Each structure stands twice: as C-alpha cells, then as structure tokens.
Image (cartoon, rainbow, N blue to C red; front, side):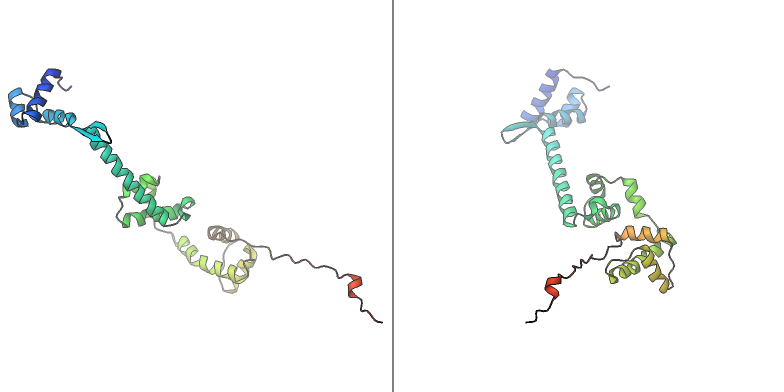
Amino acid sequence: MPKVYPKETRNKILDLAIDQKVSIKKISKDYNISINTVKRWVNESRKAVIDGKTYSLQRYNELEKHIKNIEKENEILKFALSEGVDWFNNVDKLLKLVENAVSQGYQRTNVLKLLNVPTSTYYDWLNYEPTATRKQDEKLKPIIKDIWEKNNREYGVPRIQSSLRKQNIYVGNRRLKRLMNELNIHAASPAHRVYHKPNASNSKTSIE
C-alpha cells in the first residue's frame, strides 16, 4: 500500500519544487520521498487553462490524448466512406477495407476497433487458404454470369445448367444455385406483352 503523506508535507514539497525551483532529486533526498512521488505531485499540481476552464496538467494530457484519438477515428471513417458503402453488409468487403486502411498507414488495432471487427475474425480471413472447390467456384462465377447476361438475364438454374453442359461443364443444382446467390443473380421473367383484340368497327374498310 503506498505511503500517505500529510497535506502540509505535500504543499511544502510543491512550494520548493515549483516556486523555489529546488531540484526534485534534492527534495527527494532531503525529505526521504521517492523521486517518482515528487514528480507525480508536481505534474498533478500544474494547471492548464482551456476556454476559460482550469484543468490539472494530468487531466489536460488526458483530454489532448482523447482529442487525438477522435481525430484518428474521423480520418479512418472518412477513408472507409471514400471506399463506398458496399462493405456495410458484406464481411469480405469489410475485411478488405480493413486491409486497405492498414496499407494506407492507419493502425490496425484502431481500424478493427472502430469498424467493430473481432481481431480473430480478421486474422482468420487474412490467413485463409481457399479449398480446391472454392477455387473452382471462383472460376465458374464469371462463366455463369456471362451466360445469364447474354440471355437477357432471364435464365435460371435449369437453363444455365444446360448452357454449361454444352461447354462440357457439369455443375449440380445446389452448387449452381449457391453460386448464383453469391453473384446476386436470378431468373428474370420476360417482359409481359399485352395484345389487344382489334376493334371490329375499326377493322372494316369503308366502301362508298
């Protein structure tokens, strides 16, 4: 338990250190008080005035540190928003955003904390090695999307599957459906055309 000194002793020490400019080392030796204790008293007694309010030097330093942290957070948020907003609901894009921010010089721990990303999740993603199946999936995706777009975005699983077979690519229903979901594509219904029966009176040829 730290030693408790009388208030009078503390005030006398502060008077010697601040007003009379006696060295902290000499005060420590003369009064048998540790140098760290004297330094702490001196720092706590110093004041700083901000906007008419007086703060202890310790509190001032805390506020200054807090302001700097807010400024850093604002910089990170500005960078994040400059990358777009797609990462809000996409974990992979969010983690890529973290990596981009780190590459721009932002501290990794600050970015993870601000974007609410668990450290373990980030490092799992960073060290992730895709399986052979996953690598095949990434090669299939552009082929599937190309078929879908070239057919007016109307093809669903059966017709895309048929088109893939013509290219000697065989993909199961469940896998194809999953890949289409990841690509956010689906079969669109062709535009419904409305045909109107011609009016009998308008179709007649007038002969006089």
